[in-house]
Every structure is written in C-alpha cells, then in structure tokens.
Length: 209
Image (cartoon, rainbow, N blue to C red; front, side, top):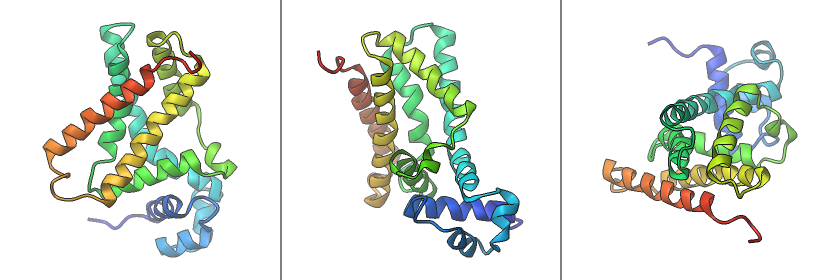
C-alpha cells in the first residue's frame, strides 16, 4: 500500500491536533512537524490555517451529511411528514455510525465535533458552506413540520444539542470502553438509548409553556 500523500498527512495531523488542542492552541508548525512536512506545504495545499481547518472539518462532516441527507430522502419518499423519532434516527444515526465505540478514528471525529461546537475562535464557526447549510435547513424544515409549536431558533438549539450529546457520549465511550461495551449487542442498546433520549428532548414542550 502506498504511503499517504503530503496533503493527506497534513489533514490527518491537523485533525488530530485541532481535536486535542483547539484551533488557537494548534500551530501550523506543530501540524507540519507531526505530518513530517515543511511549513510551506500548508500554504501550497490549503492556503492558510483557517482553510486547513475547513478542509479537516469537511472531510469529517461530509460523510455524516451525506448519510443524513440519504436518510431524510428515504423518509420523505414514504411520507411528507415523518415522525420525530424517525427524524432523530435519520439525523443522529449517522453520527453514531461514524463514531463507533472503541475506534480511535471515531473518537477523533467526536472530539473534533466538540471542538467545532465549543471553540471560541471565529474561524471554527466560519468554515461551513452551502452543502452544510442545506442539510441543516432541510432537517429544520422537517422538524418544524413535526414540532409546529417550536420556534426556528429553539429547533436549531435542540438540533445543536443532538450533535453535542452524540459527540460527548462517543468520546466518553471511547475513553472508558471495555470489551463488554464494545459488543454488537451493547452498541445496539446504546443506539436505542440515544435515539429514545434525543427524541424525548426534541419533543419536549416549547420553553416557557
């Protein structure tokens, strides 16, 4: 098998360091040192540190977004108004699938999502583009039809909560994983727990009522 090319090595190193140290805590030199590349390689392949972060985030998020879109397409092909639990399964399920227990790559994805949600650096909030916005808006519309009493702002808040809960849970499972919790039966049980909990959270009455 051929070794990873320089661009891939930089992406791998940046994903690991951004997840561990955050955006501002990660220097370009630290990334290139870990990747075994020279400093100029980041500029050549990505243009800037902020654009490197965007490339890292998209590489992690795009498979999740694609699975979320496919799941929503399947639901809407069957009914124009899916139930909340079906929408939660379609939205949260891909997060579970991409962050399996006991998998270092899955744990790194989890940590990176936590970083994206919590890092105060402006660059962490400005990497998204039309593709990510389309997924978010499609689910916002579908959840809005299923939960008409919630305002768009509260729906967005609850959808961000799904991302946060799933990411933090997957990091915790990875750090404390034992052979028992890595079994297919345990993983399937955890998936059902997550969907049940998140469905209840999404379906709660509007705040203030």
